[in-house]
Length: 432
Image (tube, rainbow, N blue to C red; front, side, top):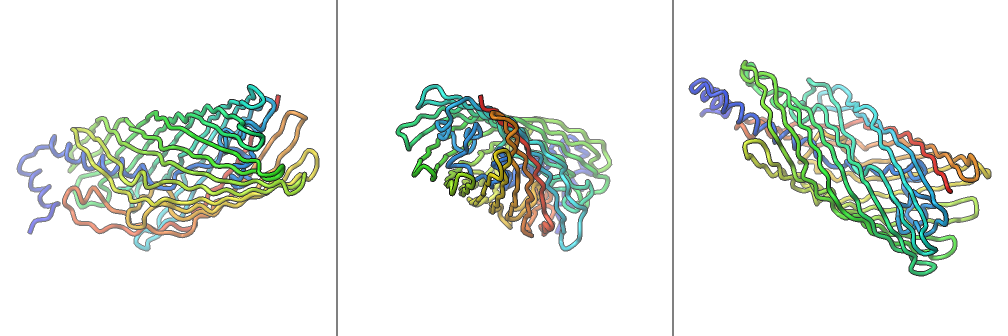
């Protein structure tokens, strides 16, 4: 009985039809290259240095222009114009084992996430605001010859949100808000699609890059339960993207130079989420907060790819909806110095049997700390340092290229170990 490999070689030898061979490989490889780019767990929540240090627990009472992210309904709390500008640097890395064999360390380098916020009161009850921040992103970078190079060797996802908001105070204790979320996303993936397959004279590299704009909305509400106790709820809608770009596959196919280019696209829905939180001023100097985020990751259960030569492919990912829990505290040591601590438990929504090596897998524990410096009556500097530890986890990685070409090859068992990330952040707030 002939195998898919025998069939490919037989057809190649009989017909010498290199054009059709290249088209066939292009369709197969593009499926994998696109699929590797959209894994689970690529949400970003690092919206400000103060918020990072407090585990994101600022939904009830942000207290400054960062309310545009944490809860725009709280914009009505501010009586003066406020501006915040900051950044977070993120460095993820991990050790890997594939079928119990150690692999070179994954180290994606440092990712830069800038933030900017503006808030302005219009009347005593009406306020407007603007936010620029990242809601999704990161990626991975492995050695070119690692055991799962057919899945990915390097992946980068960058997303930025432009977010105008308007907030209105209905009563002294209740405010609401609404805003647009204009999303810009870029995706880039590199891989060695046929790595490890028994096809002589074949050494291919793939490169896929695409971008898209999308739009969603954001609704918020805030309650002042007492003078010291505040609560809030924020809803973020789905954002549908059709990422369009170019695919390039180059190298050799059975000893023949190959350079195939073509357009590719993928439909991706960034998930909806609901955030709730509460903040309590225990004393004038000591504050605590807690937050829970529910994210509808199942909305990207399937990604529909439109590939060169009118080839389409629905990819099942089977993500689960997931929760993120955060808590934090802040203490005023002096009139000019604040200290902060936070903790986050973030559940990984990816499926054990439908894995991708795009991001380190596993539930996340985040230990956060930070300081706030009052430089003048109007100017504050915040700095933060967080450490992310991901629990040891494993995923089954399937070789879709081999399956599409009729070549039987079992899935590989990928184990993600010693997975960590460092987050360094800083931001400046100026109140007019």
